[in-house]
Image (cartoon, rainbow, N blue to C red):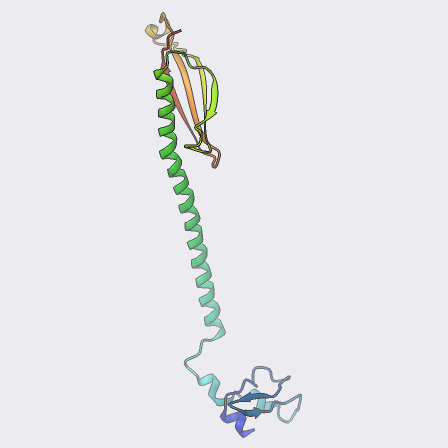
Length: 176
């Protein structure tokens, strides 16, 4: 047993069920429920409790919990960043597509009608919808009694990959 006290042994961790270990080629014998030698198993060998270079279980658990909290915050901010980037992409592309479609409508001589479609292979997933109606102006007398009434055109651009939509309202005249 003198060898076990001079070498590092883990026999104090499990005092009731100890087995033989080999350390540096020397067999270390443990005890198996021997009442007389139980107090020897409870004494930490080689000054294990005096070792200042080891971490306790509590320190390791606190470090792991701090790392877990930091990782949760990091992944949450990454997810939020991705959603903001998607929204920013839509807020740049949708007004450009709406302005292009509106310019296409304004360049034609025919009055627009209720219609819908997509922007083709150039902008997959983006679709447009046009709703037209006669513009109603109740208060200004000059606008209410026009010879050729104004048309109200609502153009909506939506992206199938997200919940975002962009609407644009335009008032104009077309030749009939």
